[in-house]
Image (cartoon, rainbow, N blue to C red; front, side, top):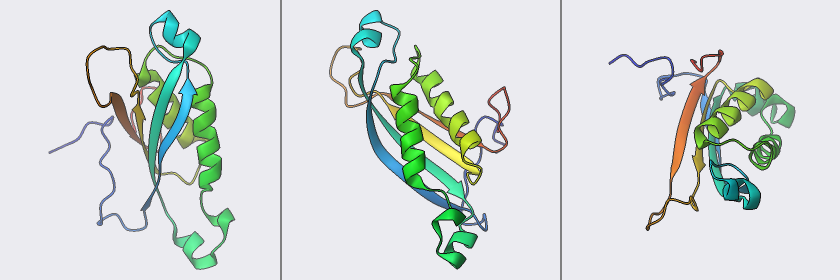
Length: 144
């Protein structure tokens, strides 16, 4: 089966040299949504980030400057969620993916899940969200 460019094949054990790192459960107050009250009061967003990168140089040197500092990545994710509001979580996820690929050259593939657990949709539900994955290089059309 052939995958479209906007659905990149994520690395498997066959992909030599790429390892998965992750940061899950980043909880931030944001003002994203289509309703005025969502933008005024804001609400909780929870973000999971998985990224693939080559860790060989870091393993060999045991030096932070040879890998991606997940504190820097965390701070960047928080700034985006707490920053400029968007109507759609799709747009928020896209901003996260594009920024992480742009700001962190070590990342070859990134997968972001944005959870909006308090979304104003009524009824009982556990969660609502989107998962978006992109491979470097990213272009203006979102293709990897």
